Image (cartoon, rainbow, N blue to C red):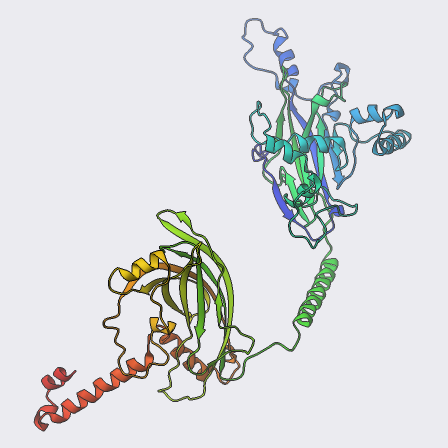
Length: 564
């Protein structure tokens, strides 16, 4: 079976595990592929046939050599099974920590004791493969000197240097400033530690490096011969990052050394963690199932059984709205006064406020318009109750009326525009932009008064922008009324509807659904009663015209088509 080609994909892979990370095991196999020195030695040997050119190379020269030449093939292939944060000492560390005088930190002195124990037990089993754990100096330097690009002439930027000092480590000491909840919202003089803890995504991470000493035989222990085979990072969310990924069936990775010999090494990475037995897996699934069921009961206990529901045949409408902005108005320092009109059969809780006034907002130039950003939130909660189930009882939808006004430095008030918004009949998020107008008087006196001393024509009833609630006639005529188009106001409305009719098991679903259809179907009409009356009057006129025709023409197709 041919060997798989080289694996050129050296990118990392991300895994998530529910098992403790201490159960992680990796099998690393390192092997030297070629030795250029042997090839050069074969080429420099005189040929046994002087008459022939040395075009072919004896392949047996690249095989295992005898031990008399100093070549030991058993040392050029090494395999090790490494656990999470398991420390395997390199030759450099063995030479360094054997001298107690070179040990300065408590970690160094602990390594000194471990090395003495290894010497008594027969020495270390690994030869070229070793590890750097989360607490070693190499981990600190490697994270500090991480490159952003692949250029060998890269110069770290100011941001890269500052970010390198923020090490994402698992903190076991007491929480510092900024990590605990405080009553103050704004910290006017933040410390450096406060900035590190609050302005960086600081997920605790533990790191481990699997290394290889690829120096010549007999000269191990030089830092310039150390190469990183694999980097493993585990954060507090049980996310494991392995770079490069496990070999699998993709072929081994290769390392080509620099220098005259250009030696080539290959290595493979395998997951050697113990497999879970079927009995343990079933037991673990039962434990998780029991945990999830208890968590569900806990959440249900937090909600409680006293969940507020609506009465049968009632609809609850909750609107979380926002007056976003106003633009296109003549004067600065705008504010908006608004109120909600509830039609027949609509009601609200006693604590619900149906009117409000925004703050005074200065405008800013955005493009060609002057825009005032209010970002004023409001909440409306109203109820609709179906009383009459006859076909003629068609309800109307609540309407939000508003007036845009301005206030200048001399406390002069001016009306900038009137408008209204019919609350959406469909639940969800809606963004509505409403154009406004204001009443004007003929002539220039009114505009001069508006400019110099303030004041302008106003509506006594703001519902006049649509159809006044006090209107009793058949037709509403605005002939002779002068108005002027002004700017526009943007609303953001998040509507939520609640009713027992939305439940599939409710017997009132069909009855309430018809009410909801009528609400949604006629929510955009200005006056639904007026439209229905117009249809009734047209039907009566058609009936009178039909009765006035001779009896022999009533059934004629032409007369029927004419009437229709």
